[in-house]
Amino acid sequence: MKKTCIIILLVLSVMMTMTACQKPTETASQNPSNTIQPSPSDENSPTETVTQEPTLTPTTTPTPTLSPEEIAIIEREQLEAQRKEQDGEFYVPLKPLENNSEKPNGDNIRAMYIIDSVITKNFGSEGQPDWRMVRCDDENIQLYKSYVEALAINDTQKINDLAYLNSNLTTLEKIIGTILGTEMNAVVLNIKSGDGGITIPMQAECIKQVNSETGRFLAIKDLLAQLKGYGIYTIARVTSFQDDTLAKYNGYQHAIKNPDGSIWLDDNRSAWVDAYDEWVQNYNIAAAKEAALAGFDEINFDYVRFPEGRKWGTYYQEYMKLHGETRSDEIIHGFLKDAYQALQPYNVNVSADIFGLVARQWDSDDCIKIGQNWYRITKVVDYICPMIYPSHYTTGWYGFEYPDMNPYGMVLGAMKDSIEKNSAFNDNGKVRLWIQDFTAKYLYQPDSIYYYGYEQIYGQVKALRELGSFSYMFWNNGISYDASKYIFPNDISGYPLADGDKDPIGRTPAMAAKEYLSVLSSTNNLNQYMLFVLTPIDYRENDYDEWLENEFPVIKQTKILGYTIGEYVITNDNEKSAEVNVTLKYTKGDDVTEIYKTVLWKAVFENGIWKIIPEF
Image (cartoon, rainbow, N blue to C red; front, side):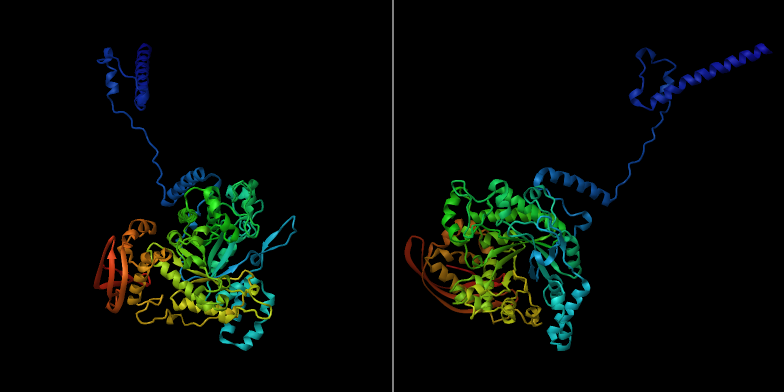
């Protein structure tokens, strides 16, 4: 019995041992990299049945599904890494995803300019500045709004009750109150001043290299949030190439220089940075990005030009020899084009300030010397902003002996020129003028100063309204804004003014035909651009340079010997088209045979003016 039990135990032990020996085979089959393949001599071995048993499928952990928000964050991180490597010292991050709103509407903006001292005050010393935002209390703002509204309806009792506000409130509170109580709706703030000073905190390495001081507007994001809470549109002014700080940086490395390497100084003995310098261009674009990142609605490039004045006029030709064949206006165009593209991811509008003469002239020497030509700038900005300050014009402009004393007429003339030039393009910026709210005492004897009061301020606005423009920016460098000057008649619905079949320039279809032939007959090439302007866009090259090279020589082969403009007929009121009876006498090319012809020229109303489709 005992022997039998021992035998049974031995058999069980052997069976358990065999079972244990088979286990590793199953484990090995789970990991193909560790599987032992049988040799050919073992193919018929009983162990082959083990390898033919079903293998165990490994358990895998499912990959978690990412939400669209998580994917966007990962993609943004990758994009920022690429941008940081690409931009180097000019790198500025994009807006946070949650703040990346749509591009704002900058049409019908009516802005007031505000200088740095209105927003901040130094509570420290010269050696240890302590810049803080001035008081900007909503209760005070609403009180001043009530005061402005009382002025509008001449509520004498309320005006007297609230008059104390003029001396008790900060200038910033009064400006915001004025905006809320009138048709004004925007502000322009310096973020890069005329001396090159940076006014808001910026982190781009290039800017920190040049500016040792941090921006004065430390709480700029809070102020912008407050302004936007009132529905106020915010514009950041970037003074571009007049920059004394950057000009002096690193041994005047980026300043305009004389041929001998010395620093060139303008009539006021100020240095300018060289707009041909790509480092300077990228520096200004970085500052603009920082303003966009802070939350501004629009970036306004001022002094986006070369110097002006007697010394620059004398030096310009020598300067150009240092820079090859690229024209100065092409450099400004290239800078603005690059800036516009760089700012697109920030969803901000871009505007550029131009001299008033640029609205009047086209490709003139004066335009080229300062690097500003309308046809180049309007195609790379959202808003083109001629600076139409009557005090800055000399005798004869728009027919006035004293332009400063005729603000209505000066603005009317300049806006007509602006409409005319801008009509030449479809892919153009919209026109928004800078106009004057200051008295130019320096033009007059002390006993005969012409002051800018309500009549002068509204006169400029009225001129714009008559031409269908409801957007402008007021310049007052002294920030002596008087709310009573901004209470304009609430009669916008009555504008623009209509004058029969005339366009805003004052031309009927027949007058447009006459203008076209007058220019074609002229030997003065200064106004040849009008043939480009007065021809509908679909009937010519869209690019002025290509038109000038390819089409203008063909047009000039027609030599006008005489013409008579007859009647015109409006052929389509809805689409604004007309036919003009024209009798012509002309020759073509080298053929001296005179041709007499009476034809019907078609006229179309395009981009605000009448244009001509000539037929010879």
